Image (tube, rainbow, N blue to C red; front, top):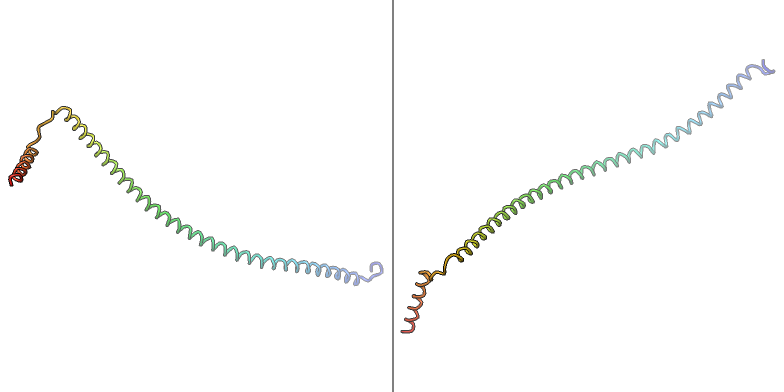
Length: 143
């Protein structure tokens, strides 16, 4: 006996105190579990939103890839066309240069021949045409 109290009451009091502490701890754990379940629901919603956003991002990436491929094909076609035009333009420039050189040679030869050659008498074709026109006039006057 302790302090005039039977040992049984002392043990029962200690068990009651431990039981009260256990009940209090259980209430605290219950509140934490409720918050965890609430957080679980919020987390599940967040994960669902994240999955949805990921799916949208994947679709956007696929569309960007297809757009990039389409743009690449268009750009390649335009580049090929530009290269063809470039080659064609270079050919035209070369042909124009050759033509200009020929014209320059012809004018140079013509200037050189005019300076060297004296004025010739009218050629035979011109003389024949003049004679023919004179005959036509004389026949027209005689008629």
